[in-house]
Image 1 (tube, protein in one colour):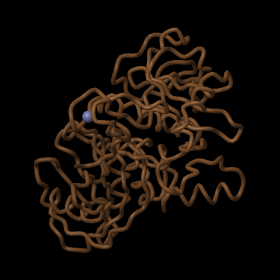
Image 2 (cartoon, rainbow, N blue to C red):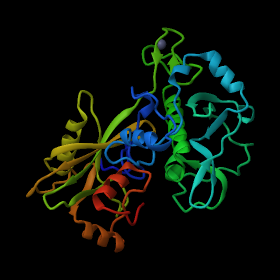
Image 3 (cartoon, rainbow, N blue to C red):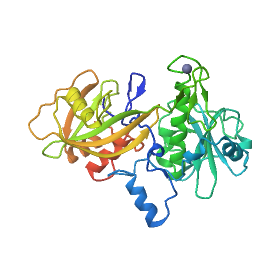
Image 4 (tube, rainbow, N blue to C red):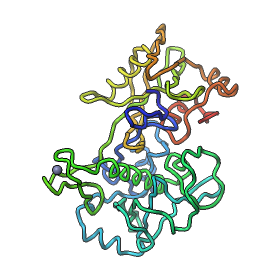
Amino acid sequence: MADGGGRVDGRDTPGGAAGGPLGRTDGDTPDGAAGDPPDGAAGDREEREVAGELGGFALARSEVDRASARRDDPDWIAAAWADGRSRVLVLDEGQALVRFGDGAAELVLVPPAQAPEGLKFLLGVDAAGTAYFGLVGPAGGLGAGPMPPPGTGMAPPAPGVRPAALRQVGPLLGDRDAGLLTHAVALANWHARHTHCPRCGALTAPAPAGHMRRCPVDGSEHFPRIDPAVIMLVTDDQDRCLLARNRLWPPRRVSILAGFVEAGESAEQTVAREVREETGITVSGIRYVGSQAWPMPQSLMLGFRAEAGSGQQIRVDNEEIAEARWLTRAELAAAVAAGELLLPPPVSIAHQIIQSWYGGPLPGTW
Ligand SMILES: [Zn+2]
């Protein structure tokens, strides 16, 4: 697929505005800490180390420790929920309440006593000891106006409080809030789509911390599912970038190629296969550059660069990809300025990978 956010098999595809699939988040990795508050040089270094070669991805940020050791401690969770200093991120139909300011935004978090009834999960604990929970429930009564109609695009937000989805507001949030919202959306989407036991079909029940569901019939435990997907910027021997339009996208939208990792396949094998299947191009020099979760609903976008050498003819598959072409930086700038091409939005890993090749801020995004 071309990265950008089409839908394939019911999954939001990797990439662009629609974005890239993003997935299992950093907190589950052995690097643990997953978010000790970065302060000073040590924090900066850690941020770089967990950010991959490119780093700076809009949805790969965090400041809150996931406190995974607390997930198996129901007494601690109950005490944290009873603590008026704890804060709750309420998700209603996938949207959080957001306070928009001057070019930035922050989550509206409420004390547990003000939160509605609903499925809740522990998001973590910050350096000051504040516990954060996510909760899926009705946000009405928290002070915001009615929900805006779905698919309301990405118009510049006016100051004020209103509901917003991760893909709209992600790049505007600070590190703490971007991490909290990405984490909460991923868990909410998992719970919504994995309600029954895959072994026996019984309705499963969430564990107190909300990071696991257990089957009451056979006792099996089920954890959040992540779909790994690769997204890759392919260049030729003239350092031109390969951009493509998914067949399902409107005219002018382009992005780099992307695709889901198949069973029994390595990420690098997926990169080579997807590029070959979709454009007929054989690549080498496959190099990982960083990752970002894309929990819409459950992808992890693994970013790569790859090289195509010279003299290869593009042959699009006409199934997923409708058109593809090589572009120099000057050709890209001219095509965007002429209104011929639109590039993926800043929330996507595609945007940032293309930008790293382009060498400066990208014009003309979706
Ligand atoms: Zn079962």
